[in-house]
Structure formats: structure tokens, C-alpha cells
Image (cartoon, rainbow, N blue to C red; front, top):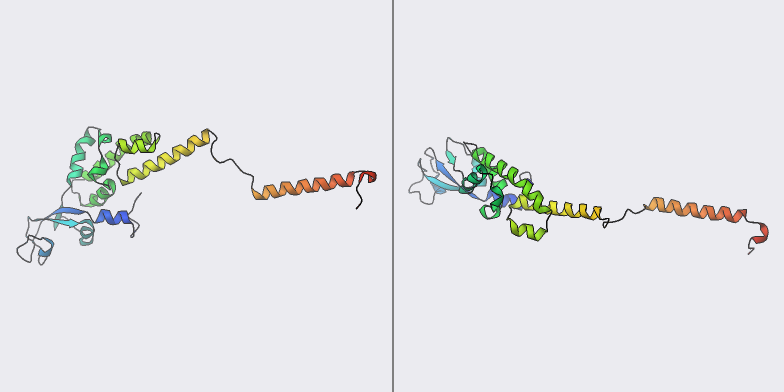
Length: 208
């Protein structure tokens, strides 16, 4: 489910295009172009700017220059995580790539909040994912809006459960004889017919 190793992944491009609020910690010369409201060429300490995730990665942002703020979507989920009620959250509405976006933000989170939130969210919701995968696919999707990774897990669960039911009911594909075995059986039948023909009395043989 991880998009990171694939440079050309469309999902990864969507995630890294997301802008994140950053607070400037020190004066950055000739970086004023990053802030549309900057009055000079430099970025002054205390300013807040929104930078796309891919740009933050390229700058190798650290606490000496910027402080990355925890997005509100993870703050909103935090209370539900503490109360173990994450199954009622519509993650798809909060962010379509909730887990992947959080994974990218984890290295810049000084308080290590995002990592715990996404781990606990998945841990609490995985059992519910298993349950809804056993139900009708469309009913389950309308019941709970999932993020991208959860949606893929749900589809895989529905497909696996369907295959399992078909196997139990013997409605799946029957085991077929391989071509080699079938050819061997045909050859044995031909050899047996020839042997039986040779063993018949000469009076009963047909002469051409």
C-alpha cells in the first residue's frame, strides 16, 4: 500500500502536492518569494507560510529554519483515538490519503503526535474493515467512507471473502486434469485397445 518507492505513482504525487503550514524560525535571506505577503526579499522569523510537501522534503526542513505545524485533520482525530471511537470517522472526508500524508509528516513532527495517531487509527479500524468486508461491497462503502489505503484493503477483503465462500459452496472452478495427464490416459487407452485386439481369436479378427 505504500506509494513512496514509486516515483511515478499518481497517488504519491497527489499526497506530496498537499501544502503544509510552516513557521519560520530564523531570518532566511532572499526567501521572501515563498511568502506572497512578504514585504521584502527575506523571510522574517515568526512568519507562517504554506509549503507543498515535496518542497519541504527537498529543503530538508528542520527545526533550525522551519517548524512544521500538525494539520488540523490529525488534531480532530486525536480525541476520537483517545476515546477509541475512530470507526465513526469518515477519513475520506478528512483527507483521501490520511495515512500516507501522515507518514510523510512524521519526520517533521517534534512531539511525535502524528505517528501515534495514524497507528492507533488503523489499529482501531482494522477490525471494522474485516467486518464490513464480509458484507455487501456497496453497502459497506456507503456505511463508512474510507481513505485510499483502507478502500484498497476493503476491496481486497471483499474479493478474498467471495472466493472463500465460493470455495466452501464448491461453486468455484473445478480442478481440471492437466494436458500431460490427459494425453497419458489417452495413450494408455489406445495401448490397451491394441493389446485386447491382439488377444482375440483369429476367427473373430476382421481381415481387411
